[in-house]
Image (tube, rainbow, N blue to C red; front, side):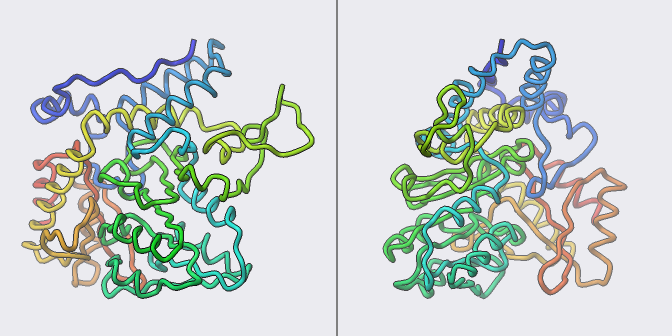
Length: 400
């Protein structure tokens, strides 16, 4: 018998999280001992994901699994759940992680010609830079965006570099340090008007911010950040109309039709985005990811985003009052929106490192320490919807 699909959460799940601390800690065990504010790095998984993965592991040990059903029907079910989150068809989703795998499949699957141009942001996370730089060996010209502020990639900036040779624009939905959000729809429209394709690295927003794929051709995101899933389980979206154009660059017995597991004389790919999955999937991780996705869908991504925004700005205002300098906007503004990432620094030498140590040792507060290209240290906070204002106040009290 295979592990069942995740059960629905009670309708009052969010209200009970807010009202009952023991209930919150039962569903998010990390909250028992820590204030976890590093979801932009490697997130912790909720109990529902632990339960889903454990059920699979137990069935793996006692021999009760039906692997044919697991790899076909169960994985199709997970593609459907991911499609609900993304707003696309299940046939447009491949179950692949990490994020860099999907991005590399795009880079290696298009028919590049010398003189083609690809647009990227050199100060994005490196996983969304190297696949495009590698194309220079084919004679592709890499155009690097130069924003006036970290992560401030406006439609006007992108429009200024588009031209007749632009084949692809590859950007992140949010900057991993400043937290600034990309206007995916507006930039996608510009890219398509120029006759190019649009690829989005969505790992820093998927699950925490609503996203529209109306103007997106390719999207990749692992689940180990805002989706609250495990490592190396993720989603890779390819618009249905482009699946014949994006050649699978990995071949195996899973994505190439192999009757009775025997090779035939020609390569014919499976239908839909399964053609990008060459071999056995990370089933354990994907079952955990599914449980977390179902939880986020039941809470509602719009509601998740609103709660994260309130937590982020409560923390930001407190940090500013204590003399910290923020990377990115210092106040809420619809013209310069941010996601759940908040990076702050102190101009006092050693102050950021000292604060990082203090938060962890004195308060069990988990944050991320990052450096920009100039070597400036930033303390990065990234709360999720289950965190509380009380936890933000505790962090601020430790930094007073």
